[in-house]
Image (cartoon, rainbow, N blue to C red; front, side):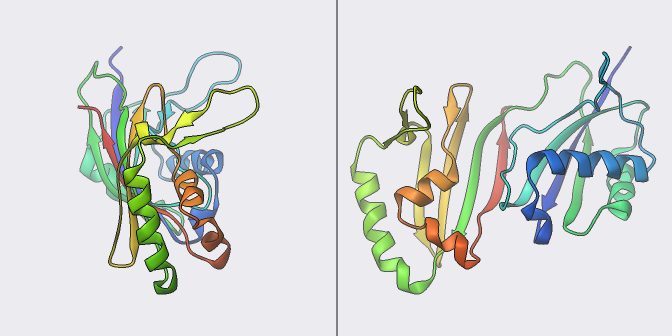
Length: 209
């Protein structure tokens, strides 16, 4: 049996950014049903739609170019599928592209993600100095819980900079782990800004080729 897998690009924005990954999965399940798109199910006592997200998006984070892969029951025209899904999409979810993937191709794996975070002018000068210290240091170890090995965020952060009032972060994703953008906000003394209404946006999910 040939499995028809489609890669979908979408945006998660507005109030929809306030839902977590599990709720986003359920939103997609409802969207496929409303659009009349047959999704292949897993086997077993509790079958689930065969969907995968190369990198889950945390609650409260907006996504400008997210990725979902799904196995369909029937063949589908990719361009027509994107338009069909968009007609039924809830507010805050925008389907931007759909691409039928070659049979037998491995599922998508994230290799790099990028984030932006707005920084008010009164915090910019101090942040620039902290970024300079960050870049001068060779190690940035943090604890992620009792009994777990410390994680060196420096192994994963490829770029961090302040430009045009935005903190931009480029982060490697590996099978050994990755850095979380909120960990970087905390190290840079910006974690309080989320409580003031500022929020992260993931601007890119780059896949392994």
